[in-house]
Length: 266
Image 1 (cartoon, rainbow, N blue to C red):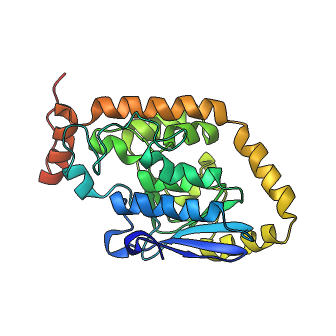
Image 2: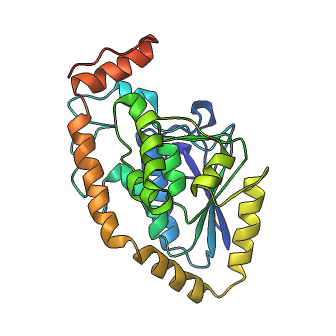
């Protein structure tokens, strides 16, 4: 069990990491960010772990940022962190690292997505090496709905996986799309009615291979985009820092809360 019971870690050759905040749709608050990082850091040094399955308890994988975190934004701060641009965790800040750490683990990570993976929840899934999803899973690059941009490594990973025009359309609109559509976009590896069972089966197959070769492959695959990732991760934070707390960003959140159309200024 991890930080404030937000994440469970069941260690074995195939290790299960589960977000367990089902009453809040596994939404990302400060404790959840810390719990994810804590789980990843623990697994980095665990001997005998061959593959990791990342999943969410309850009705969905992860609904993204906790609305209370948005409501508590003050002076460009999120969950108590005022400087998003500072690289506090290698290439990343705290929030990016909760998703990026899964790319840095020496063993493959498979995300099993059911129900929904929205905003930061989608970015968390993008941190995995492989993603399986239910055909009807709902996904969205939804940060535009809060007057913000993806800032958990999403822009880096989206451009690794998708065509430029698709990234732009989904990013500019925040449109919700399903698992089958995500498969066509390249965001999902496979769709299945039981992605968790499929993820466990694939993880067991990986665990039967030479761990030295598997880890070498992961190093090679991850290294292909490492230099570009550093610049992209920093750029995300510069843009996000400039948006947080601005009149139009605040108006976006207030309008959503009041269930009205926002009134923006140029």
